[in-house]
Length: 75
Image 1 (cartoon, rainbow, N blue to C red):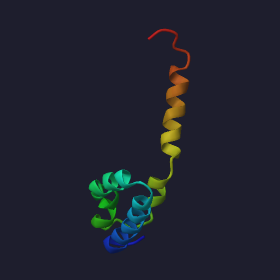
Image 2 (image 1 turned 180 degrees about the vertical axis):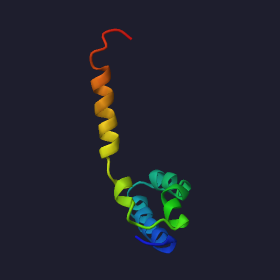
Image 3 (image 1 turned 30 degrees about the vertical axis):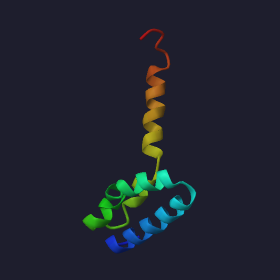
Image 4 (image 1 turned 45 degrees about the vertical axis):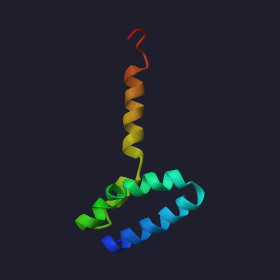
């Protein structure tokens, strides 16, 4: 997706999909619509989105935390 207009259009489509299934969830998403569209509004090119869509950084952090705290017997 490139540009703020395309982001707004896609967000609207996804909001409609969620609204058809769960009204409360759709309202919550709509109230916070600025956050997912912030990169589009700033004009950030779509190439870094792969980094944001990947969970590898999060998974590695969790794995390291579990390894570091796994042997703790008493907190």
